[in-house]
Amino acid sequence: MNEDIALIDQFNGFFDGVEKTTYLIEAGRPCQYAVNNNPCTFCKFWDRKSYSDKTLNTEIKNFKNGNIEIISGGSFLDDLQFPKDTRNNIYNLLGKVNFDTVTFESRPEYITKERINELKKELPNKNIEIAIGLETIDDKLKKTINKGFKTKAVFDAIDLLSKENMKSKLYLLYNYKKEIDDKIMKTLKEIAKKQKAINKTITIGFETTYGQNADIKKIVAILKTAKKLNLNIYVALSGEGIAKHPLEKYNKEFTEFNKTQKIAALEGIS
Image 1: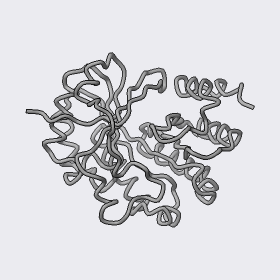
Image 2: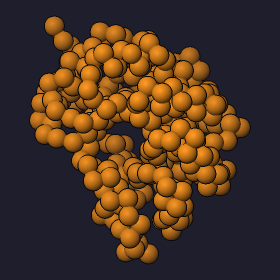
Image 3: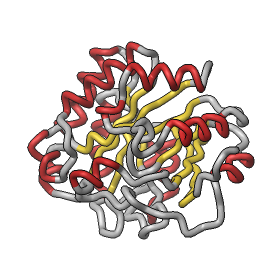
Image 4: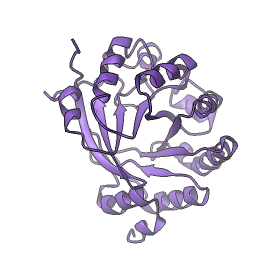
């Protein structure tokens, strides 16, 4: 019998012309890196609980079309956070709906050949994307936010995913620490180099820290740079049930940018 997977939140968005439904689920256990080493300093999800009666089991039945993202504040591929039985349960639920691409989150150390083979076996003929929280290219700055891994580990994981014909996505942190913001252009350039080296798209999830104001003009400049570097970059717009998002005022413009990847969508921002 499949156990219910508690649902914390659910939201929709358009990304490069395709609708995506994101399910924020309660993991069976909290992020094990956080348990053993303290969480990443900005993370609000590593042990988050659901206070809703909704479950992934019920809500995913209403999924119509497009792509699916399963996020959990940790690593879907970690046996200690998501035991194999729980992963199998989620695979079973995904097998009952029609989608093109599914995205899971993981730290790089759990992205192994064994886990990739499992994903291919359980989700045949589906595009699979693994999202990793790179945050910044600078390893010294990663240490100040307690990431617990270096850029090389992330790029090695991308190499493996590329060889196995799986997609990769990198989360970048913004509006949290000035030193990290100051490195954002260098971070984008290094990702562009990696993308060119593997000759496959690396998607970027641009995560603006919510609960505080953000410089909208600087964000638009960052997006312009990303597009000049031929990067697909998507702006997170949900406060994920925690706080008001700083980009809420321009939700329409950023949503259109996410949908089209056209800078022209941001011309109305002042």
